[in-house]
Length: 275
Image (cartoon, rainbow, N blue to C red; front, side):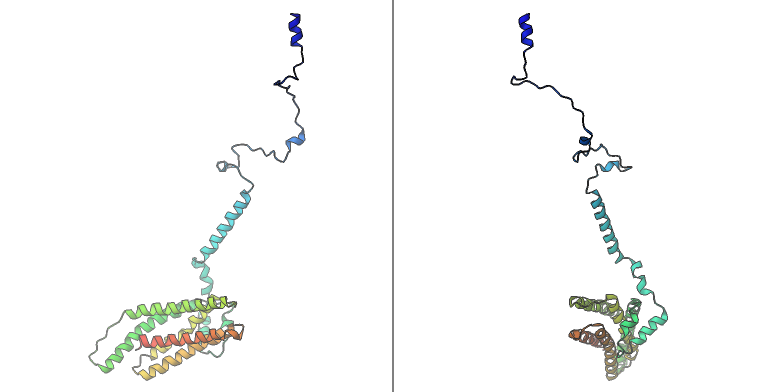
């Protein structure tokens, strides 16, 4: 038995494969606040949003990104909202009449200064729509009178295609031509306002409404005089005001192109609706 007691008292820490004693150390306060010790409780209790799981460090930036996307979407929705365009219809009868009278004096060239504080789209829509119905109805009437003059047996018939052609021609011209000049001036580095261009071209069409009543007269020579004078007045109104809007003389060809297009519109109205 003595032999067994002596064997059990032999030191064994130096033997290979021995297990060292477990030393229990108290955790220091500094170890609890270590930078990497970011403990989280699952599931996190964030009010009623516990189903969302952990919130990472990028959560705030993602929220900001969602907010900016929502703001951009709201801005784009403004283009398709009627309330965004109500400011361009805030005009009364006196303002509209004053701008219509200005279109008969192309030499003034101060139309942009008159509409600078309040450009409107009312004139564009109202004048274009009125011109469509006027040239369609009076064009049919003028065609009938011309045929009646040569053939007394001619019966009255209304050509509905006049309305279709007038709609595409007038609306297309009044919307696309100012849009084209807007992009051209933007490309050339000039500040351009699309609403002001639409306003300018819209009021420039009013003179064709008045000239349409004179084009009923079954006299071809008189018709050409009326339409050329009307076209020249309308073209001069657009070209001179556009020239005053252009900052340099290097872009004079822009106003010349506008003059030519306006004359072309006048000739088209005469050839198609009052042949």
